[in-house]
Length: 231
Ligand code: HEM
Picture 1: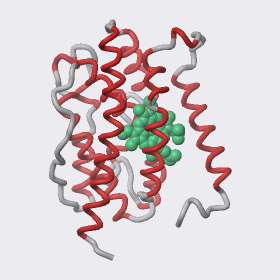
Picture 2 (picture 1 turned 45 degrees about the horizontal axis):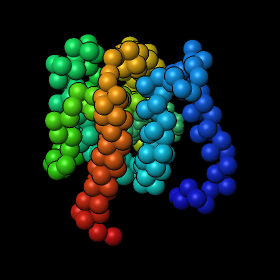
Picture 3 (picture 1 turned 135 degrees about the vertical axis):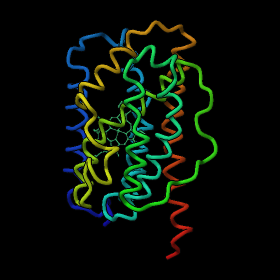
């Protein structure tokens, strides 16, 4: 069903706005800082607002929760993204900064989801993150960790396909210790790191590159599916 034709569109957007405000409040509850001293995580949030909106639309345009076939393609993109980031989640230089970093990676959950659905594990796609600087890597991780917030909404939709955090949608499940808590711990560490001006630019670049990469993987997942299943 096309979302553009829906009579509920104004309500949908109003609801999305409310959700965003709710999460901003949850994340930045104690924030009273003026614009010129915003936190690093807030700056990242601001500069990735456009890419996030665009990706949100791209995900929804493929209606991943309407059919299991479409969901499987979305899952393939999620798996490839997490698989590419595995090297960062397991980088000892980064886990020296974020102690529980390896446990935060969702590559294994996404792989188990693919197995639950009897889907082949997709082959790697060229152009993944390659030897980023430490600050750039943190930008990529910011996006991957942030995507767990949206996952709270996505897993509810996945229930319509009889998927759950124990079958097929494990990678969207609540992280150990809680979704909001895990995110807050992550950004607290991120915000407190001493970074040079050059590193501030690198972290921004990493975050933007991560959104671009997810887009590529999403397009790949749906394009290769079309080839495999001609209409
Ligand atoms: C690969 C990266 C990401 C993907 C694929 C992604 C995808 C999505 C999607 C599809 C939604 C809509 C959920 C719904 O309305 O049912 C959403 C919502 C959300 N996402 Fe993301 N997201 C990503 C990264 C991030 C990041 C980095 C943050 C925070 C820094 C974030 C925060 C949120 C929040 C708070 C929501 C709920 C409110 C809203 O709809 O704006 N996401 N995300």
